[in-house]
Image (cartoon, rainbow, N blue to C red; front, side, top):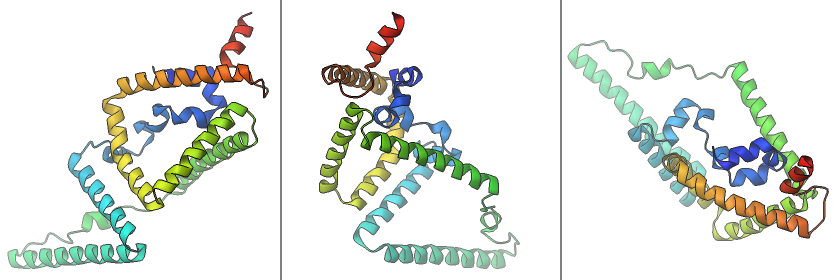
Length: 234
């Protein structure tokens, strides 16, 4: 098991979930938590299907970055409508010539149940509310300096984001996030052991530095984890 999972068990990451989760790949890449179809797409279980979705999504985002959203939506809708109408006419003519009765070419798709059940909506809402409440609680803890070291870390992250915002616009970040969605999970899955090993080393160094800073700056009501555990042993 990665040291990240062990850290979560001893309670450190339960106290600082936002900070710990940044360097915990197991908090980011959990295919079992995804819908099977989504998991199949972003983990490239079906290369052809994933390639089509990735290519279409990337082209759409690139178009939105150059043209208005309304124009892109209108042109894509027109293109889709033209394709479905042409295919419908083609199948109708083919059936008339061959004197077959295959029915509507999109019959299977027309019969798909796209409605959201009350239970599914409640489950989604419950998960969303739980994440939002946890996120708000963590932000309150960081902004109100419950733990000065964690708040300083958070400030460094925000400072880095100011440079990210200066280098990239919002649409560029969306495109990078989309590309990452289809690349990072598969890369981590294929190289999980080596990535976990290197991240464990980074995180152990950060923890060591953090504990030294906590000893040097006696501010706040929390003690370093190592010191707290040694006191318990005594």
